[in-house]
Image (cartoon, rainbow, N blue to C red; front, side, top):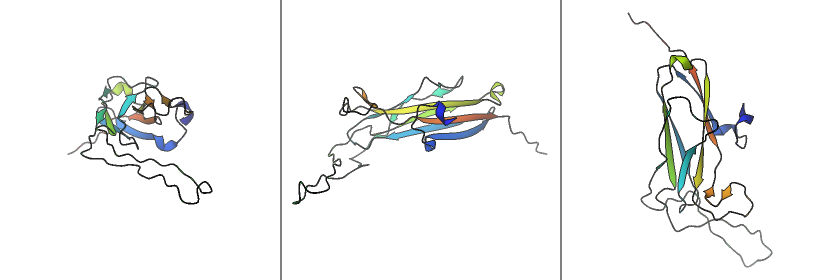
Length: 164
């Protein structure tokens, strides 16, 4: 099951849910970039695609009124340099209007979908080409691609109850 999608194998990147035929489900994907000046966009992957009649919303920015640091640290070199444990962390003074983004999927399965399962996968990309050619395969001239996140949707028969 988990080997079928192009992810790192992290099972927390999957959400399994059930929906009854005729019921509407809304699935919201959220992504945020730790670099506050980067802009994030979410994309639905063509493979595996989406179920028939699913409505795919636009990737929508969640604007920041001010810099909201997800990741904030400073480089520090002590008097012991170069004989010290040296780590490089990231500091930014900027903020992007689209550091965080959401994408909604809305779907109402039909009776014909009962007993079927559909996997829908989304990936986030920032707009930074800073790491292109530096080694990571997910860093491209168009930005850094995050881990694929998927929703596995199983369609159940309608849950009917008679009220007297």
